Length: 174
Image (cartoon, rainbow, N blue to C red):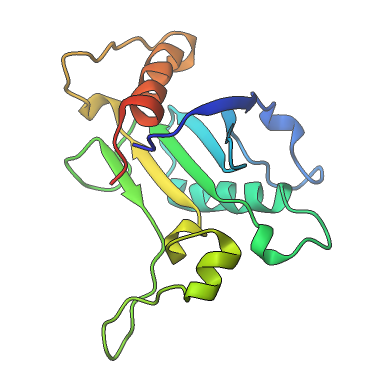
C-alpha cells in the first residue's frame, strides 16, 4: 500500500497518552516513522465501534498535534498515515483494503485545487493530499489471498506483521 521503508518508533501504552484524567486517549498499537519524518500509526481493532470513523479522525489529528511544537511554522506539520486493521464491518463494501485522502473540488467548475509551484517547493509536496492524513482500512476476514494466515492469538500480531509487509514493503502506491 505505502511502498515505504519504515522503522518502529514506539509501541505506545494507550492508557498513558491521555492529556488529563477525563481526556480522550489515542489508541495506537504501533507508531512508525519514515525517513522523511512521516508518521505511520497502526491500530488493530477487534471490537465493533459504530463511531470508529470518528475515532480514526481523532487519532490522526491527535498524532499531528502531539508531534507539533509551539512556535513551529505550520509548514512543518508532519504527514500522518493511519492504518486500521479492523475485525468487523466498518461501513458496507466488498473490498478488504480501502484508502482515503483529502482533496478539494470546486463547486462551480469541478476542478481540483492544486498547490502552486511556490508551495510545492516550500512544502516539498506534490499534491494537497500529501499534506493531510491518509487512511487505510484493512478488513482481514475479507482478505482471501492464499498467503493469508488466520491467527487471532497475540492480538493478531502475526497477521499484523504480514499486513505491514504487504502494505509497507511489497505493495505499490497508487
